[in-house]
Length: 263
View 1 (cartoon, one colour):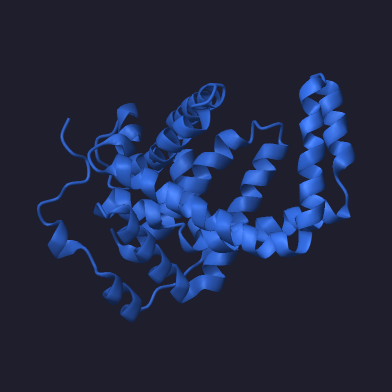
View 2 (cartoon, helix red, strand yellow; view 1 turned 30 degrees about the horizontal axis):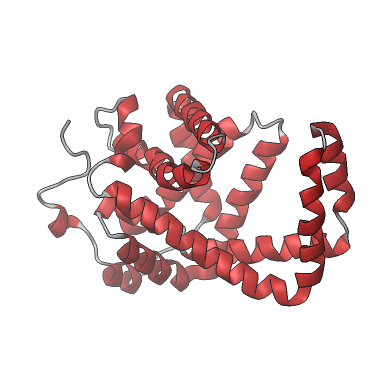
């Protein structure tokens, strides 16, 4: 199969980051989400089908002993990039089929997406630790120690036990961790798109996302907050809502990238 995103005139048509920033751009989170919803609704059947495949693969990998987490890191980023791969063809009204969702595994996309995903996760974990641990180290340590007791419990008792462990300090720690994670991940939210659409390396994509997002950081932060709230709402709807929320989340990010860069 021919490469999906290769274009002999790409270097002539692609706008540089400097030209995008100098010419100015708007960040309208609600508009991006509406566009993501439109892409989803126009072909919701195939997007739901791929979301089911993604969830099934993720759940299967998570059950693997020892290598489950590693497998997830190697497969997850290219899989979710599939939404952007398919959407680009959809936005251009070009021929597309289900196999195009796996464009994240082609060529240099795979190692770049995995490297970018691992780098972003490590950066987020580092900042969360720096922000949260100085204030909540002791309650978190006590919480983790108590969690070890659930290994000898059945599922129902384990659930009740974990709920009983929560206290205001753990709640504040979780909230601070979530805010910090959102603040960091917002800076890197466009990095996978630079890899898929422009063929950037992991670190080029991270730098490009940081440079672009930082110019309109408050607006991007609100945009990502809306996306996170949408995912939470989808999860609370007995998880069925994730079949729409997950694709709309990634399609909205792709729509934002497309409108800003013109790619």
